[in-house]
Length: 299
Image (tube, one colour):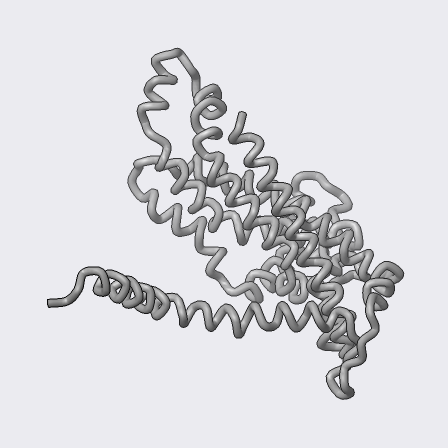
């Protein structure tokens, strides 16, 4: 008969091995494809390396160069402008769609699928189609503005002033369906008793939205803002296909600057330094959002 004092640790080790066997494939994938490249990029940011010659340790010179590089400053400003437009507009559009489609009516599944469809569409196809829509000469957007009496409609992707708004509008249209699904899940988790109690107290639709819906969506809204912020600072493919950073440097963003310096110019050390700054920037913004969220929950 097995001794219960020795059988218990043995069973614990067996359970631990089973648990590790489940998470090991995912952990190996994360370590090989994410963790190791992150550590390598951190080390490379202090080196000069063109992939043909041995890397040379240069200390903080890449970061000093970053402070003097006008293109990187422009890319940082454009990335911030893109995030300032993309995050609030996408969150508001997704919330509006979720409120509109959170109803039990015939055919609601079709409309929800139609709203989500742009998110699963190829980014290249989205960029090409919206480039045609924004065409200043024969694009439907400017033709519609002509019908409204606008004599000189914007040049959109051919204008240094309007290229970034055109990219932001396109990304909002593509992404709002995905975040609508998150808001829909949050809306359906709010207990109906809260709405009934508000109606008994005489609250109208606007008051129910402010007193019940928005507070009930607080965790989902926090998640959406975190995801949108990270996504905004990583934007790359849409801008490369739609404007390639132009006209001039009007839509050049940090991810594209990293690509140009690393892959095209072969300056992997400098590109890694920009990557590290981008990572720290997103990390700080995320921590600030967590701080605001925790402070709000304590009230």
